Amino acid sequence: MSPKNVQPQLTLLSEEQIAQAHEYALRILRTTGTRVDSEPARRLLERKLGAACVDGERVRFPAEVVEWALRAAPSKIDIYDRAGNHAFQLGDGRTHFGVGVTALYYQDPQTNHLRPFSRADMRNMVRLGASLPHYEVISTVGIVQDVPAALSDLYGSLEMLANTTRPLVLLVSDEENFTPVLEMFEQLVGDLGEKPFVLPYFNPVSPLVMNAGTVDKMQVAIERGLPVIVSSYSMAGASTPITPAGTLSLLLAELLAGLVISQVFKEGAPVILGMLPAYFDMKTMVNFYDPQSFLLNLACAEMMAHYNLPHCGTSGSGTGWGMDFISADTYWMNTLTYTLKRGGLAPFVGDTLTSKAISPQTLVYIHEVIDQSLRFADGFQLDDSTAVLQEIEKAGPGGSFLSAPSTRRGFRSGYYLSPVFPRLSLEKWQAAGEPTAESVLRETTLRQMSAAPAPEDHDDLMSKGERFIARRNP
Image 1 (cartoon, helix red, strand yellow):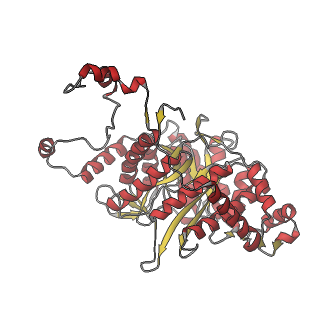
Image 2 (spheres, rainbow, N blue to C red):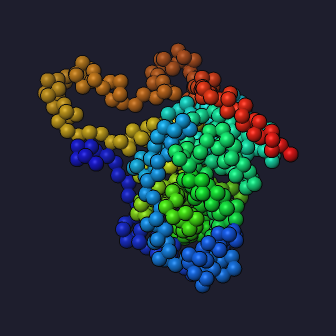
Image 3 (spheres, helix red, strand yellow):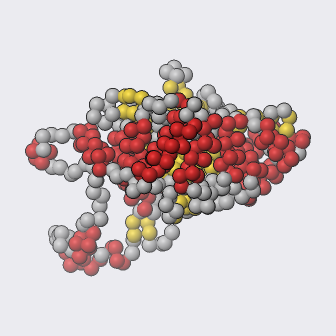
């Protein structure tokens, strides 16, 4: 960082605490171990770790193998768009956001009513997300429900591919459809591994289960040269300890186990690690994000920085009853703190109602939150040119800077101008009919949705994809 740049810093863990968290995770791995449900993966692990480390489905990981995997995995991963253009680099010290993920319901921006998520909703949400510049990836937005269930992943993934050229974070709900989805992509656009734009996303099952579906899909993706995301989802008090330290230690152990497995599949395979540290309310049976969830998100980001690995964190999604005050405070807290870490992927913006629904209005509102958070994280310059002492001298006591050179240069970008909410005086607000912020957001969302374009090759990809899926229709 340049000494002339005043930039906010946010640090959570000391070097001693980082070493302690790492040791806790290693202790879990070498004593408790993890359950690995995939027999082919266990055989590979037995050859790498030694027979003494594999006891039935239970696998224990020696510290030296974990350290080997940490050295083997790349620290930076280049991500491309579907056209083969370099999009960004994970591990570059920036925070990258995306929309999603896997909602069951769509919340209509006109009425706020819910309906089952459809192909049309996937198409519209993908185009909307791709039209907003701070969303650098598109994650699987919802589970398409107006097609045969056995084909839902194929139709949903096709809609993602055809309606944006942005990189895709891919979640496939039916394990049997993962390979067919990749095969469809390969048939439509060619080799996926040369300039990867698809990032398959996988969750272990907490606590400490590497389920067969996750592990086997990881192998399929890694063999194709794709970067993979391994992210552990917790419900503190249920699937992980209720203490933040316990949750951090357990989820970190799961991630390191996933890292070892990935490197056993292919040494040097690109892997992004992270966690979604939610809580579980035993009274209401609802999962939610607590302020300490965001501390754990930052702690994980710092652990990955210590390991020199790319990080995938939470976007604070799932709270609220739509785009409301409840959603707003959670997204603000998560987004602002995460941007201050500068260096991770936050691919799941937009869902609400405990992540079962998604609203286009959340995408538009949170894009503004991201915009302001990035501006905050960028700080400001402090040097002779920006201190403008000569202008201060010229204006003198009681003077004005309305016509100063710095004002003329910077009045369009010197302060934040919202693309959604206009600044209205009381009189102008009254003259406009006393609009609510909610109504302005709704109108902006509908306008942006109607204007969001499709890629030029949309029709061609849809036609070819439909034929591919038709051949698989039972």
